[in-house]
Length: 125
Image (cartoon, rainbow, N blue to C red):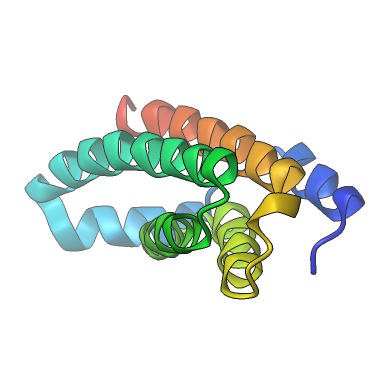
């Protein structure tokens, strides 16, 4: 399991995306890329909200599904830190441990905001 110190170290890194991975996806999708990115930005915020709701409701299934979905989408974009954090939450929910994941969900929220900000910077270039 990830420690609070590891979460802080991940969140403190300046680069939140693997730029080469991100640019490969941009080249592959061409004109559809911007639409996909806007969908990701909207959906990622929804998934983070679902994680927060899952914590409040002590709903491991909802937490698992939200973490799993965001993990996959983030991996596709090269957001490795966010992918790893979501994996940790997914596994905690699989073990019915959502009630102990407030720090992890806060880290996911922070990392998601940073990833989204970096994406907005990259697509505006």
